[in-house]
Image (spheres, rainbow, N blue to C red):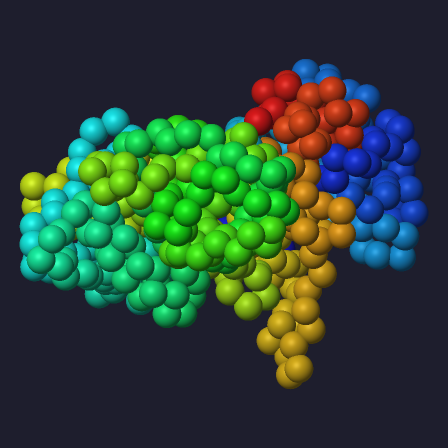
Length: 425
């Protein structure tokens, strides 16, 4: 008897490092390696030697995923050519929102009236239970002195935001950058490199700087005026420099000639801006089953100040968090309810997660094939349609390619009538 369900959901994951199994082989836990996927007939014979046109309408097949010898394979429902719809999409990276207040790298500035209170209001627009009906707001506020400058406003509001955002429980939510319209000059000295660390105020150096002093600004992430600047609050020769706020770029090593310094005397007369960038939240599918990127609305107390929406947020396609969530949720349709036990039994994962083993962000990318259909379900006095959905996530190689990778995923999508190169990032 066909089980009535509003959504039959199945997810299979490919590993690009696994080669396809020879056509005609009977797929078993012993013959289908962990991470291999394949199209099989109802007798479990691998059909990867066939083209999509070689399958006649009405012929039935399945997609299977190996998990290694002694482990049960993942198997899709029976699929019937002519009754299913196949769509696909290449990997699209997720990205965070970027909003700039004041100088944006081209135009704009911050106000600088004496003895005036300025603030930034960040209204959270996250699609979660806490913020859908009653959005939460975060603030950064600063009152200027009797001899205010844009530098003072930018520094004061930025430090206030950093402090308040550090108290945000889920994550720091937003990284705060200070922009300045002065290009500066290359740093000089015996130092060969700067070593920056994300979210740290300390930058290690291996020598002596000759043109950087306390109160100056430095730029490490690039040489353009769209790259953020940091104020030097302390300098220890042959050891380190201390920044006014935590570094928001990637932890890296920067050559002496690639950094820029802007003297304090120049900075005082510069145009300044505040750049707000959403940060990627920590994600663990066993603890927090809701992946999203941070969306927000930023406003400034001075309504005449330019606000630039530089980049919108998106969750992406085939990012590892979404794949992990789909993999996890699909187990419920397979009857794996061990998470409901006491103590719970964690479900196994094969999704590639950056930083786990040898996996990097380049090898944790997936493109997706979506197979959907509607099944007529007739009862004695009723008629309904049950919807089915199979998601095949195919892993891209370290160069963001599926076509030409020689993987089982490439062979499988080709059998389904999809050009593998169309799924390259």
